[in-house]
Amino acid sequence: MLDIKNLQKVFSTEEVETTALNGIDLEIKDGEFVAIMGPSGCGKSTLLNILGLLDNPSEGSYQFYETEVADMSERQRAQIRKGNIGFVFQSFNLIDELTVYENVELPLLYLNTPADERKQRVEAALERMSMMHRRNHFPQQLSGGQQQRTAIARAVVATPKIILADEPTGNLDSKNGEEVMNLLKQLNEAGTTIIMVTHSPYDAGFAHRTVNLFDGKVVTEKVHI
Ligand code: ADP
Ligand code: MG
Image (tube, rainbow, N blue to C red):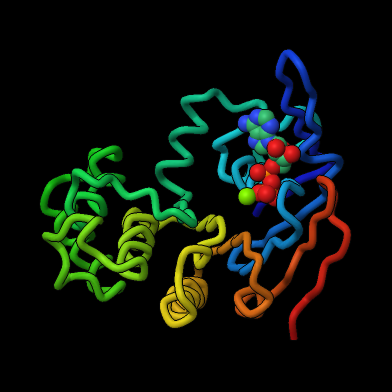
């Protein structure tokens, strides 16, 4: 379970200070599917990066399964990221020089997973995302939908507890977007917690709950029935 209390994030440069998050309270339970919405610049990506231990809060508390994230070493945070969290981005973030198979294999190489288990897991993830037939293609040879399915296969290959998705359908047409949303929904139904930033009310409808941000604060929360 993820528990955030009075979280603040300030970005400082020599010229300006930007308060990206300004007192966020948010609790996310195991198995939830949460959508985060709000206008551009309101702090959605900053919140997602902090939830995913890619960035640290300036103030406030973030408990990751009852451990305060600020008290963890960078090494511990990296270990948790590798083993427990999968990321999906709007721009897919695949490595162009690697094949579909190699992109999906990467998290397991970082985890030192043995070769035979790696093969089995990569193939299972590709199978699940209907990407086996493109395993030897490079990202530039794929449609946007196929690239995002590859990115989701990479995000799930180490069977993370949590998937963080930052506008996962932002670069997709509605047909491919719907396919990606259905895949995320299936993963959630199989037990994965999903936290997704989106601009699309339709995509948010796949979630159990929508959290609306404005100017670095939670302004409304809506539970979907
Ligand atoms: P959103 O994802 O909702 O569009 P962001 O979380 O990306 O918003 O950004 C929130 C605010 O923080 C914006 O004003 C943005 O310019 C600022 N910001 C985000 N990341 C950085 C950074 N690394 N350095 C400085 N300012 C940042
Ligand atoms: Mg953003």
